[in-house]
Length: 484
Image (cartoon, rainbow, N blue to C red; front, side, top):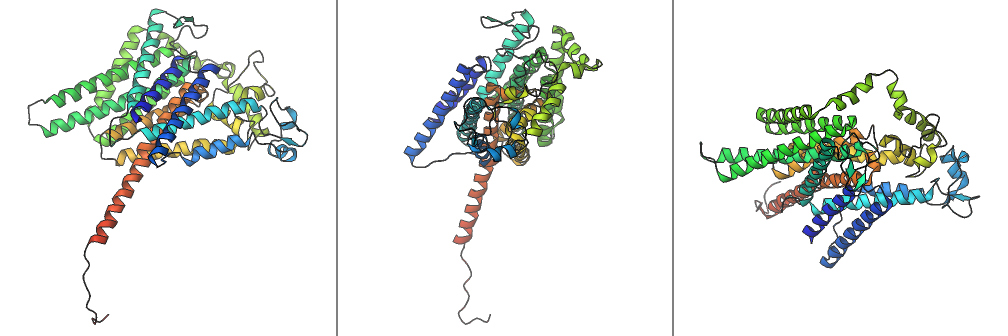
């Protein structure tokens, strides 16, 4: 059943990606139902086996509880104290009937309930990924599936860019018609998916490279075994897939996406070099990037260069809009400092603070950290992002210490994917796109299992063996009348 659940998980990710990133209500609702059903099936299976093993991080429970708290009716005096700006914004429909004495913290309870269901689905994805990944038994279908989904999406985006076929299947594109978007509406979110997949492709190439080195070391000099050929072939294939993903990222023309991907690839390359201490690895990585750059130049990177040159224009950052939105969002943080205005309510609340670009409606802040601070407050942001940063640190430590071959490669991919999206989130809202948030949750689940749970379980097992050996070791007998 575990293999079936892994395949099902990959299909849910693929369905969310294909359905315009699952931004439509029907798409993300089906995604939620599928993840809830898979988690329920896992619980039923474990109940029949007589043992419940649910790898649920405490941080996820705390964040879920914090979000749910904004839907609990509280005394008006307490809410006004926690949210000084609450008097200026009436509560949208969906709150308690007796709003004179009791009120919920969320200014739009319906939107917060939708956000809570999405977040619960992401937690289910994290738990499923953490449970299903087992480096001691078999290779992960989830990792292979993520690479496959990302590569197919990259190929479709490149096809759009190179042929001018500006459609998402049969639907004509309305926005970003000059960029590669794959099946996403926004090119930045398309780049967000690619930047999370590319580190896994590079990490798998690293895994194949280590096997190739090990086989060369074991075999007789001058003799190339079948395992060496297979490992070298896989290494070259995954290097080619990295080139495909990087080139498609260029074609997206997402400046933050391109920078985030390159930073994550260099981070993965450096960590792998620290692990291997082989210059050939760095030379191969640089060669792959040069191939990607060369193909991009041949295909035409002038629009990409022009996008970066816009940053040099006087006043571009102010007219572009992001800085203005962040500046106005400070007012929301000031009036809703501790609890926020409720998950998913940024677009509703921001209209009351918007001072520029009045003809535009901003449903997102184009910065995940700013938007989450407005939605769930400073306390919620600490509960959400501090454990993620801690997990990334644990993954790096585990990668450097682990003497195995496969598990460190998965950790390497998780590190690169998490760092890439966390960087991109400074300038965009990928975590508000259900498909990308689902992939990110899956990455965290894989990293949580490979970097935290499995090493902890092995440490306990090793300690138990040592204690057992200490108990079974015969002790020297002391004569009864011997002097003390």
